[in-house]
Image (tube, rainbow, N blue to C red; front, side, top):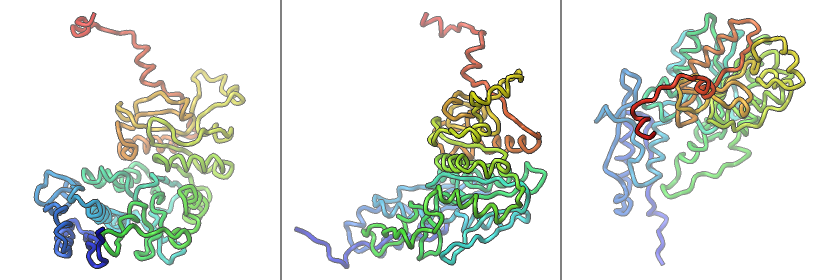
Length: 406
């Protein structure tokens, strides 16, 4: 039987949250480690990064290459490096600095019970666009896989710029923090579960810290559903005017949470929420919209209400909600799926990842929001899906390739 003495465990790897010095943590880890067994599992590669003028993250030694996760055979080393890299782009660092430089964009401190502050980006106005991201993402991040290709596309930077640019007035942008619902007392900040598991440990072989449900949760924001409720019932009333027009954008499971909340409380928000857009996979993961008052807004025209539209030549199927889903088709191509979603369904222009749907489709969504703003009493009509459009196209030509199989 073999046992390891308490003083022989490898040190926990640490990496500076600096792109150019990120590889220094790898060097420090090698110097601290005394065990040849540990050193044999460590690759010799050291990576440092920079942000190109083209808004891309690249390696210093090879500007043609992006972020490299597998720097070691030790999984703990890889996780620590990724967390240091990611922390460089959170709202508390890079994104916050970029956004705070804009004269038209102000920040308000939203106090939390642990004496820290949660940052809400806000421009005082009567129109507010609220974004609810996925519940595993960092605040202000759409998709980490897109950050290395374009910082603006992978984060809220491009979204905020376009949202304020397309509006004639100063539109408020509120970014809900759906993922960072754990309170890290040592750092005085909210973190995701992924970040929690990557927090510093006494030794490299130690397990992650246990979550204390009393001390490591923010009261009123323990779950994504409670955070959605907090945004609508605490943040929006505090920072908006009573007659503010609210437009909602949700992604993935964040979209399912906000739609469920609005359906349950629609009597309160019916006169304030003017449009809803969701970006998700090809199947709606939220519960089915059932309440009649919310159906009328979401899009489903019930049998009881259908007689109201009998005098209109064009069939009214949806009102002020849209779904943009994973698809191979170009962005905003009409798709089937109204029966599942209950509203018009369009391609998001992304064929694989739900987290990439919002970056690919938000420009079309902002155009939809603006259309609702500019056209009084706007009501959508049923979009003809691409499949039905193709079926009605009778023009067909036999090619030489088709004749081979005839």
